[in-house]
Length: 190
Image 1 (cartoon, helix red, strand yellow):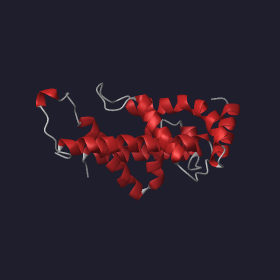
Image 2 (tube, one colour):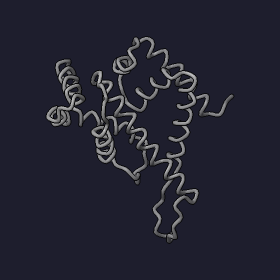
Image 3 (cartoon, one colour):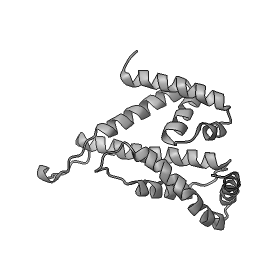
């Protein structure tokens, strides 16, 4: 995105935060494409018969964002970081419900021939990653935030640096250390 568009987006975000509904109307078409890109990033490893489509994820996140009150949008990257976090939580909630239903949650009698082939493998992986990320956050919140912004949010190194107001070099260092820590944690090594 060009610098002037980025600045205009930031101005609209701030106006919206101050209650200008006209700014929200102007903001929507500006951010929609990027929200779809972020959602697509989340959805790229999902199976074909997933329970949510990219557009539905964007719309659900957008509805939650519109309901958020008293957010002081610092800049465009801050908005997309919050959006990515929201999408992550939407998918985690769905994954947890899917896994819980596999364990008998919400029991209902169903003809087994009518059940589509639904794998909870991806849901379990997403939950394991979230648990590991939460464990990392307890140790080093900044490194966990960098992973969340880069991996889940699909933000560039520069955009990631803007959100917590750290240097690009710090982002890269945190990214490398956090990824190594998560790989170790997820592989079950002590």
